[in-house]
Image (cartoon, rainbow, N blue to C red; front, side):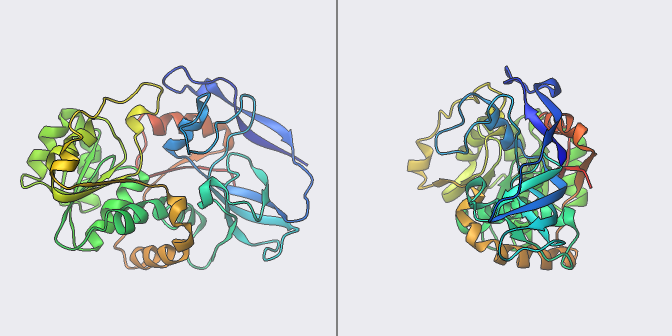
Length: 340
């Protein structure tokens, strides 16, 4: 059997280019005991994939991709054949071997730090694209930052950066569902209007017009929680505006993902002087709560209180461009590649 996969053929020198990736035809490995064969229909495109394209990934993070080897990410598909207990042909599943049309998946592997373990999904609960985004890794990441990490509660003010993206948009809506006042920042007036007019954020501003100024105008009395997807100058502004005993959930630092270090943090002593809590996290640390998260977010989605728009690219050959578009801020909501 043959399939196609996306490979890293050149390590990016700064900004990723579509030609740094290629789509090639390869043999599908033979299925072994404990494995399943999956026809993948929806592939998640996430900014953190860029970190694994450098020669060495950050300490403690997932290993760097090898040159000439296939990349991977979260995905949803249908089991074609199973040699693993608990899975049968026809099952809708989530796995971590995305960016290939047909994947051999080890049913016992704790992929992507635990967040990408092979999981059977309830096809009646939601369609595949909702499972991939809102009810999958995106939702788990957003929930982890807002609930156990930041402990956001009713009446607090929450600022979410990169709020028009997949994780940011869910984090902001989740905070609003819990009675928080939510401020979002994004790049460009169209995204700002989207946050305010379509997602119902209480306030939104364009970070390109000035992060500190925009935050001061949107939250003049300060913030209690910062959900950080950007790092750099955004985190500097958050430290300035967090109230005493405020919390920052450090989810990502996309400002430094293109090989150029993000601006340094020159006001970190504010964490001491204001008794702040800054906690980095990865969704995999909360993987054992994925079923609980899926139930909560599905209920909000069915009630019309949660949405996750999609930026969809048709065909695996569009995957290199999809990754580039995501990293350069050209997409909104959940970016995914559809192959089935």
